[in-house]
Amino acid sequence: MNELIGRVFSFGKDVFHHQSELYAKLSEGQSPKALIISCADSRVVPEHIVQAAPGDLFVCRNAGNIVPPYGNQNGGVTSTVEYAVMVLGVTDIVVCGHSDCGAMKAFLHPEALEKMPNVAAWLRHSHAAHSVVCNAYPDLAPDAYVRAMALENVVVQINHLRTHPCVASAIAEGKLTLHGWLFDIETTSILALDGATGRFAKPKGPVLPVAVAAGRRVASEQAAE
Ligand SMILES: [Zn+2]
Image (cartoon, rainbow, N blue to C red; front, side, top):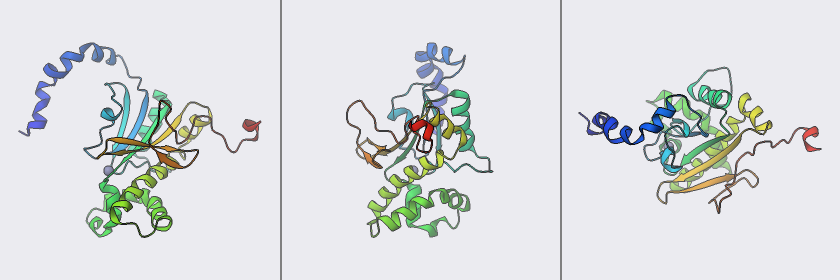
């Protein structure tokens, strides 16, 4: 048996035993503090990054930390977002990209996707990032291209999130804040998107820059008064 899979037999004794009180409480229901949408990459573990305990985080992982824009097609990410916002009432959603992302590298080698039609179709949701990087930052070396793609992809997926009615209204009601992060595997540091400047920066001090602040309204004359 795969040694990793076999560890399930010792979960009860080695892990659950020490957290039985917590699990007893969680058996009555969940009230996670945030939804995090990250890449499925094995090196990016959201619970580790924010030192979360069971019950703290609602997590959605997929290749490329993608959020399809709102539309007629049902999907796992869309359903997860809707449930997190409307039922669990999370106050924060984090889109977390990362360095050295295989999904972003795929744009350098599109021929490799010919035998993976589902991956190719999924990555269409990142084409806007590809277009931005190719036209706004031309002539990047491959490593710099992949990093720029990861950053711009977070921006694109934050914009997609805002097309979901439940997200748009929760922001406007002042109940929901969006965050865009890049996890750097080599330095284990986080860059956070500052929506006010449009730039990613290393957070300094206790205040974390946010991508979209709760309650930010730009269209309503009434709200601006
Ligand atoms: Zn990735």
